[in-house]
Image (cartoon, one colour):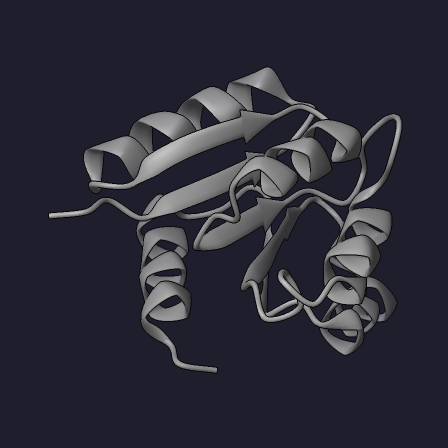
Length: 125
């Protein structure tokens, strides 16, 4: 069985480690990036099935990454779940309006995040 690749983009190494372990245990292949530039380089090499994307990061924030993914034909339909500590309505609305498929606020419940990952990977949008 082919494992789906998921790109996790977060500058918090603890979050990266937790998500890598959880998603690997759930059967996904995980790619890690600590900032937006690393994320875009990873996507240019091989487009994953889904991206978990933090908003607040150095170098390039999550909104900039999302905008660049949406601007490219090959990544425009790539499911992106924003995973961030920002819970304000304006931020959530901006992400969804920019094309994010879902929005999860930290601290997150791993079982709910895994369910959202599974739903967004299997969705035919």
